[in-house]
View 1 (cartoon, one colour):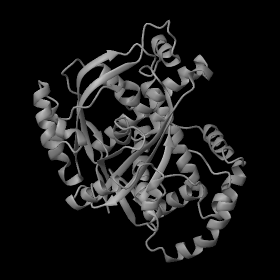
View 2 (cartoon, one colour; view 1 turned 90 degrees about the horizontal axis):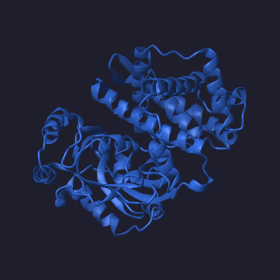
View 3 (cartoon, helix red, strand yellow; view 1 turned 120 degrees about the horizontal axis):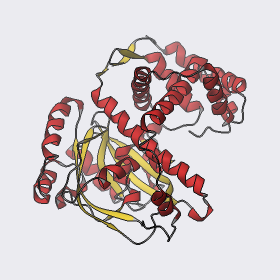
View 4 (cartoon, one colour; view 1 turned 180 degrees about the horizontal axis):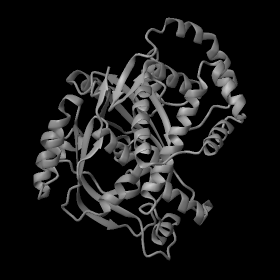
Length: 407
């Protein structure tokens, strides 16, 4: 997470309005969500929002803050079950490193947060949860995250490598799965995963998929493997032609892919260092009226910058524009962006339990300058991409297995 260099100024400005906001708050410790046997409180939600606002970080809207705290509860439980425990020394080092991103000492950073109404405990919980989760993922997936020589050579574009860029020919099905239909959709997805032919899978796609490809039976064009989410790479490479992935849970939906073809391109695989995208959130979910509004909006925007005019005078949280490394993208966002060229749009995704449509636009992809990257850097990048992919999949599994009740 990048921290704004103007943290001190933001903290002082935030302090001016904090008193009024807190004075109006009622039932600060009332539960907002229950996660298995754990509770997320209103106080924690307000603290998380304020914390992210002061850091000038994305995800500071209320819904994102609640979901982030729910995920924190699941991570914490997984860490506890694993037996991993942070040392106080390790935590203090992590806190100091976090503060250093704002060019502040830990004490200066903590004081600036407190002036803005963010408690020391909020910072400590946020950092300790992140550190412990990282240790769990490293321990759990250390063996699977090893990097082969062929992978390194492909990433560097080394022509002496026996490997080369890979592209895949897929068919896709993404089925909306709001909470009230989650069990029904999961059963349907398991049935689709048993498809024995391309024609059978295509029939399912035409009937159930929410993507633009449903009219083509879910068929996608040839796609470079590196454009797809890193977590999908080992899953797709393990398939034979005609085989279907197990159902893959993503926010508010379940995804399945059928491999129709795979081939080496003869060109080295390209590594993307950053993906920039914009998400404009539209009330109404996948209702006919909202989809029609989104279709009209497609004709009005050519670039991500155009969305600022569309979102003008609306709440700040309706437009989310960000730049992330490929492995840091939410998996459902990454799947949709893989199909797009800059300026193109997807309306396949929803948020808020299906009540909000995501108008998703790819702004640009930034290729990593391989010639300037050392072999050690490539190894580290590839390993982190694999670990992030495993972490995303594990998090989706934890969400699917959890009992989550919004209050």
